[in-house]
Image (cartoon, rainbow, N blue to C red; front, side, top):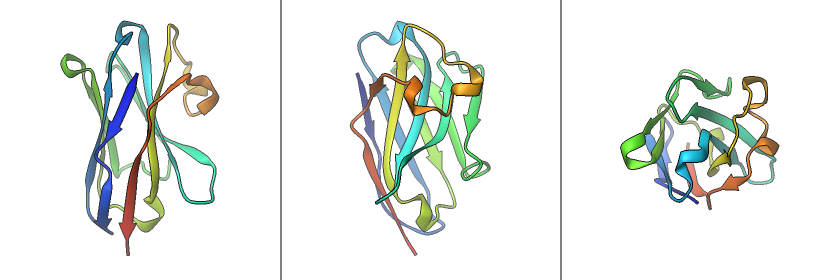
Length: 126
């Protein structure tokens, strides 16, 4: 199970840190991804991290502004978002796939993930 939190209303240029707390079969999690869905748009990939911490991956739209990290002791993955823009507005979801790895070339593909958190709303005002 995944529980996302940390969303809120922030002005453009501001920062937010989202958290995704995992419970249950965390031993079989290899990758945690962050996705977002803006109003009226398809859900899109934002970032992902290997649970081992070995690598991170970012969408071009957030590269340089976002950092994904994890605290394995707390079973938590974070998404630090800086210099937020109005186009970053949306519901942010964390997701994982249990029991197997997601290859790098597919890490941005939401179909690869089978466990999703409930989402947390980020609103960036201009």
